[in-house]
Image (cartoon, rainbow, N blue to C red):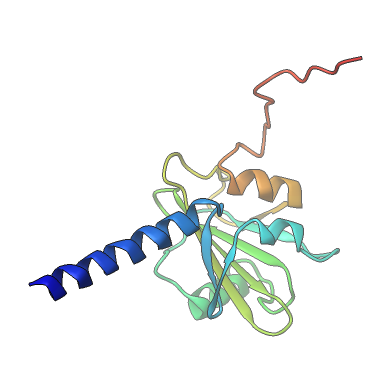
Length: 156
């Protein structure tokens, strides 16, 4: 009895520690086999890299192969060109990014706990974003019409 309780207490402490470790991160995402933070993506996008939103709804069950085929067929692009390709699910709270970093394909995902990702109304095609717009999109901000929520006061 005591050993069983000790094991469950240890498991609970481990789960709480894992949760607390993730609190400081913006979002945990899978990059190949490792874990990184989504805030790495906008700042580490090399110069000349384009960011493409796939308009319409994407089946979020797709992985590397399915999304790569979608890039080739629907967007008429090469998934290995180094550009970022963003896909959104039907509910609008899940986003996947497919990116070739030079050594392999990276598939990153983010789910908003509240709200939806702002997406173009078009049903097909793609839209190009800047790194700043991508950063706003990942935070759940309307990247089409960014609005400052508070006035900036400068002291003289």
